[in-house]
Length: 269
Image (cartoon, rainbow, N blue to C red; front, side, top):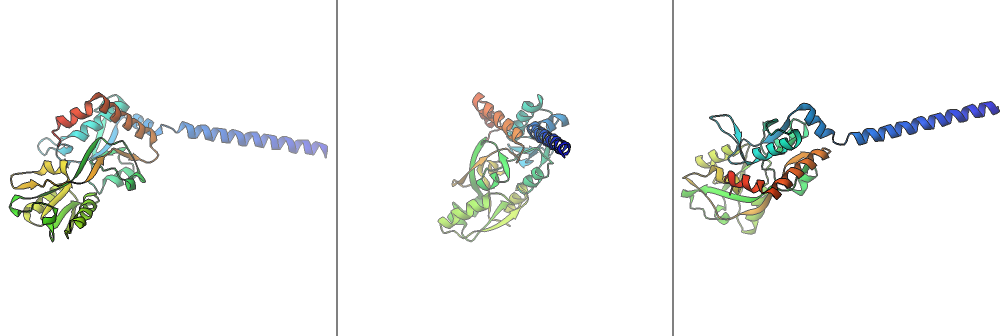
């Protein structure tokens, strides 16, 4: 019986040691997972970025050259250089206000740099960088309409992008001035501009800097601005090393003045 107790005791000791070892190994594995998001990008050799291709000066695909250019394109290249040492090791994926979130969720892109407004609600789903640009919602109308302000849009229809923050911003502001407005949602900005030109909508509403890219001789942008919009680069929750690297890049560009140079380069208002 005494020998049996000794054997059982030894077996229990071995089991405890084994379990402790597994726990330690698991902890090391978890710790080793830190930075795996950056490692995956380095192993792949490219940074995948969701960008707009219909926003002049921010992210726009030139129909003549098929080249995507803009402020957010240059900003994304700076992140690629920070991670991979080469700004050209980057792949761009066209996104809209409606598709950018799902593409990030699915892992089709590593980050989104696409006039993505930072909100408390969106922070629950994604990591957001510190702001790299601040804007506010504006209104574009036809010069011939005679509309001078939001109050003058009472009973009119406003075109907005699907899943964008513009609709809520204008709804709240319209109530304050007693203006009853309607909305039509579109999947892209060119569609909204076409709807304005054809008379399907009476106003095109999105952030002011985006509107300037669609301004022509027949339209005007009203002086009023609504609800400040801060743009941030979004990455997937859990990809904390990538989020940290993005923030470091933006911070360095702010301190060096490079961010202001890019804004000036693209003539963003």
